[in-house]
Length: 275
Length: 318
Ligand SMILES: Nc1ncnc2c1ncn2[C@@H]1O[C@H](COP(=O)(O)OP(=O)(O)OP(=O)(O)O)[C@@H](O)[C@H]1O
Ligand SMILES: [Mg+2]
Picture (tube, each protein chain N blue to C red):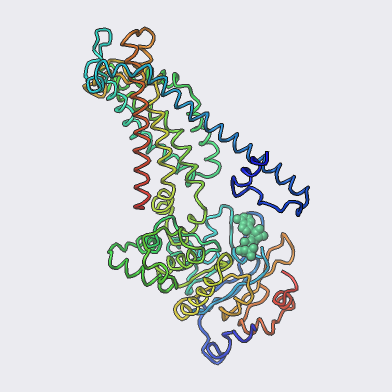
């Protein structure tokens, strides 16, 4: 069932020219105060493709994801060594403005978190921050973004209504639209589908498939089938002992990782033996 | 008994559903019923609490109204409210200067104090490190615990001379009242505003930062609008405190029942006049004081309604 839905074959065959790494991580260690959450992670995230991060709960997937847009900077006491580059540029180099970085690297959270303002204002939030003021231009951006987020048809007549009046799944797609409105290069998604209804999950997977040709997506998911459906590359993380840092166990093409994992621990995890 | 049992069952969604007689286990029914009795007696208890509060307000209004209504009949509503001379011992019962004084000192204090308090709340909730917050917050709360007569002293001894120097007068008047009241309402407004900000879902903060907003953009474009209702509540309560405050105000405004010619000239408010005159007033004078209490009552009700409808309007737009 998993194999039949993999993208692995035609579209991303191995004889195709390999895409460049959009994000590249070298020897990353991450600390919450004294607690080291991640150790020695080295991995690349391919451009215009979807990469899934999988692993048991608490193994640092969210932590790792939040390194890419420096959201961890907001948590006091966090520390990081190693190197992460976006298009070859070190995003933790002195002088890099995290605010600017976050405009290029958007993020979707597990809990839909629309602002308590109208649907329109939610989507227009980012463009307005960047100085777009003309009503006609904003209207265009709002419509396009909602269309790309697969929620336009449901909200086009109620743009003035509060974003929080939508269903959870619609809220999540509204949040996706809000991020797309600033045209990010990279979209980070932290378990975007774990708190919403199946119809919306389907719509989100559809929109991910459409976005794939334009942007780089990194998704954290607990749902193995989902990882297999939406991603071309998968990274498996594991924290072997509590209070020990987690590591990247295996990274590869999703098709290969799921069908013939190289590491015994990966195999155990995807066959459901632990986690 | 049977009737009351049915009433209980039908009373609410929490009530146990009807059962075929003898079909369920007796123990189960018993437990459910006693649970329901507990629930409904608790509900009655809380209803009683709420009723006491409402009845208190009603009784006070009734009492004040009974004592004061006669002055409206005697002097006439318009002459009472808008008459410009308050000489109660000589039968002149115009309270306009006092109404003006109450409004002027309250509005000025709000204009000064509310931004200060909201700024404090934003600082405490969004900017201060936990350590700074742990020092500053109790300090602000302490302001609320200081008896108002101490504020009065401070205004009288410290502020008044400074203002007298700057303005050339005695320093009794609106400016001193504004400053004192502004400080007094800060803890009320800031504590409630801070609660409103801190109770926002943390998700929207993260979302805004993740969109590439700066801290300030997040505060003024997302957090403050989202906490607007709570902040407006805070301002209402601050206003209530300001318009009702008597002691501190009494000590710094000079107490002359006239519309002051300047911001450093003596004036009176409704509350200070009631307090000062109550000691010796009799007859119509006394009735007039109760009439003023009615007006005070109505003013606070109107102010609360006004701010509430403003906030509702704001909510629809925003
Ligand atoms: N703010 C924090 N402060 C301290 N430790 C944290 C913090 N956030 C996460 N951790 C710890 O870091 C480790 C990794 O957490 P993280 O949330 O990244 O895991 P995860 O893989 O996303 O888990 P899940 O699948 O449950 O979301 C855990 O041991 C967690 O307890
Ligand atoms: Mg997580």
